[in-house]
Length: 127
Image 1 (cartoon, rainbow, N blue to C red):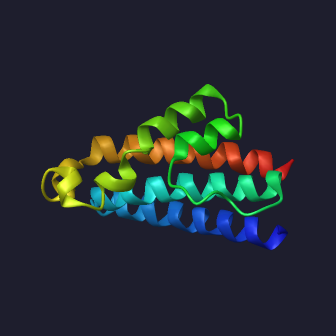
Image 2 (spheres, rainbow, N blue to C red):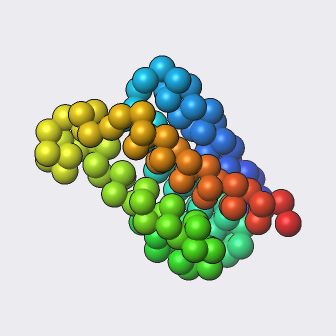
């Protein structure tokens, strides 16, 4: 299972790089999309390592963070990022083109939340 959690964390790290590039390029919807992905992959990496098993088949960041006993700052980030799973992908959820809902400000907040989750998971994985 060691390889599995490392793959999940490696994916999160790569998506973090992609999100930073997207932010610099003004691709704000993609930043929000990647932000959810970063947090999900980070939490699943930690889940695999700590539970020594497959991660749950869910996209619910808050549920995973609660089960991993994350601190409030990570739980808050998970709460903020949770809706992005659907809202960045589906026009019916976004009330139109999802890209219209994102600007530099809210994309930056999403990325900051993803970084918070990623860093917390990374620290626990290094211990």
